[in-house]
Image (cartoon, rainbow, N blue to C red):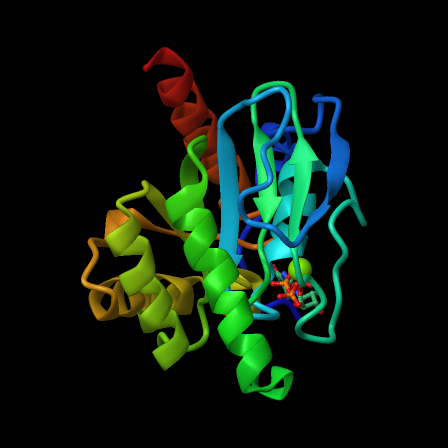
Length: 215
Ligand code: GTP
Ligand code: MG
């Protein structure tokens, strides 16, 4: 039986992937955070805990299933995976906080992300992902500090919203925003399954890219 708390289907226009109409090319997988991309374009990076849904979100935004590798095994993405769109690059970064990776690998991941944040001149925005079901982990708070220190504009998204009912999404959004010291309007619940929030995130990315082009 369908729960009354189930999210209603989105209008067809909102279900379309924001970048579905764009040609997209996989540029490569780069372990060196200083790798320059040619031609230079604004870059949008995706950062979050391992398994939080980064690759799935990229696929939802671009309407390409399997563009970024989706895995139930955490720690799959180990370098910057770069995708070229007409207006920008999307950069899928390694997930942090993967316990089994070992101390050295974890430190290397952190360094890669930190250096991306500080050393990529065209990095225009960061999409930071947190799982809507869990309070921010120590790793999340550590990376929040890195993000704040970098001064880069950050779009905060709460992933896997389809795993909760509608009122729980609202409550968790409020609680997580509070835990992060942010306003409720500063965090966007998303689902790569139901496409909740995908159109809004696409619009925010497009606005960030346009802002970078204009400046
Ligand atoms: P790493 O690259 O290993 O850091 O993981 P990732 O952050 O790229 O996560 P990925 O997209 O590979 O997804 C991890 C798991 O979560 C997979 O089993 C996905 O199917 C699942 N998943 C991702 N997004 C969603 C979502 O919106 N809803 C649900 N229900 N599951 C999701
Ligand atoms: Mg991934």
